[in-house]
Image (tube, rainbow, N blue to C red; front, side, top):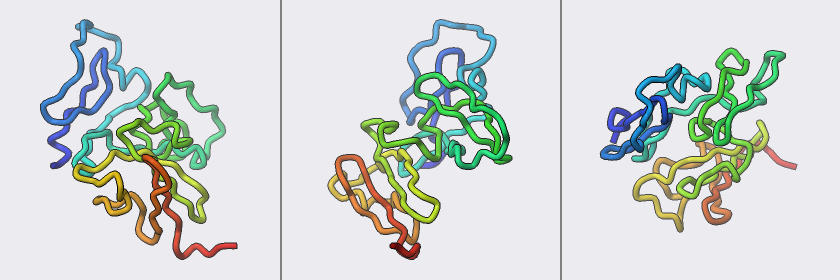
Length: 170
């Protein structure tokens, strides 16, 4: 129902968010140099409840917002470079913590790929299916997948396209 219901686990074996009543597999490591999140540079991860689904609070991952002259970090599979509010690379985060991804291929089967088209270009985001959302009518889900001022069109299994209504066109 709210962020406090979600369990954030950041230990020697796991960096993930779980719903109430669930948790990570057992971790045989009692001590480690750094937790999984911290070891990748993902400091201070937060849990969030979005549409009744537990997940990481989203952080910036859009490479178009990088202002510094530096190479992105090399991240392990399933992780992406994080962009700090100051506009520079800031470690790696689990892909499900990213506010944008590179394509719909980054989304898991229990997520919907939201493709937003507007003056900023095309952005991709993986969002959890809200509890009670009808997969046959994803545009009627609450919370809505598309930002205000955008039309919503279901374009295939697990994919929604959001198009700006007031951005003008060709």
